[in-house]
Every structure is written in C-alpha cells, then in structure tokens.
Image (cartoon, rainbow, N blue to C red; front, side, top):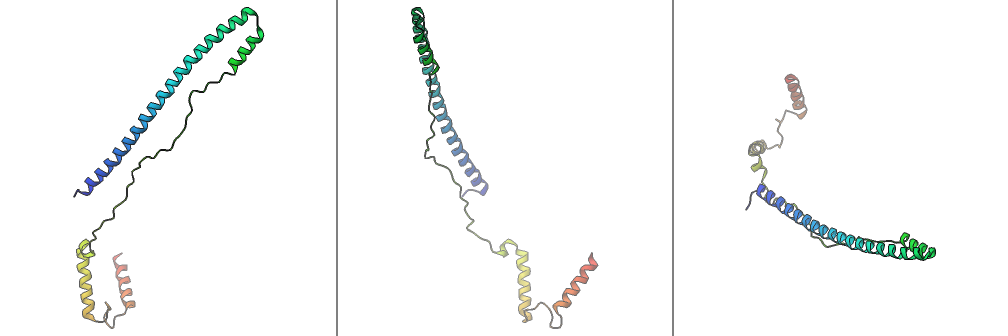
Length: 159
C-alpha cells in the first residue's frame, strides 16, 4: 500500500498525463486542420491567379474588338466573384474525461484513541458518578445555583 502523499502524487500525475495527452490530441488535430486550410488557400490562390490571367487575356481581346458590352460583363463577373476558402464545422466527439471521486476513510478511531487523556478523564468522571449513585456531580446539599455563583466569583478574582 502506498502512503497518502504517494497516492496524491500518483493521482495528480495521472490527471496531468491525461490532460497532456488530451491537449496533444487537440494540438495534433488543430495542426492537421491548419494544414488543410493552408492547402485550400494555395489551391484557391493558384486558381484565382489563373482566372485573372484568363480575364486579362479575354479583356484584351474585347478591347481590340471595342466590345464594351462584353468588357462590362467580364468586369461584373470579377465584381461578383466570390471565393469560399473553407467551411468550419464543430463536431461533437466522444472524449474520455477523467473524474476523481473521493474515497472516504474506512477505518475510524474511537475517541479514546484520538485523545487518550480526555478519554481517561471522562472514565474517571463516569466512575465517580457511578460511586455517587445520584448521577449528580454535586453533593446532596450543594445546588447547581451555588456552584455557578462560586464559579462566577472565582472567575472574577482571576481577571
């Protein structure tokens, strides 16, 4: 059996290992997704460069013909050109999360084991009460009112 501090250290290490592993999985996935975005960008950039070259070439043909109507259509196509690079979606995945549950102590100590002096004093008081037979800690002609007056006056002197 491991000591309590060893168990704490091992549990914290397990949590850290899980966390670091999970973060690595996310980082690896994010890296791959960024590479896909970069690849899409390069493909679209090349495509747009090709389109621009074609538009310039076509435009020069229309200019030579003085076909302003076709030039205007070509310009309108350029203005309305819309390029979507990527679509971002968030998918839910079944990720395993770590949960800690507290284990309650199984062994309990009796009060005497926790504070042997108090237990011994309580035992002496109980023995004294049993001998007295009345169950009262006061003598028969000694009332609790008298006791509290005596204790109050004794505490006044000590202050």
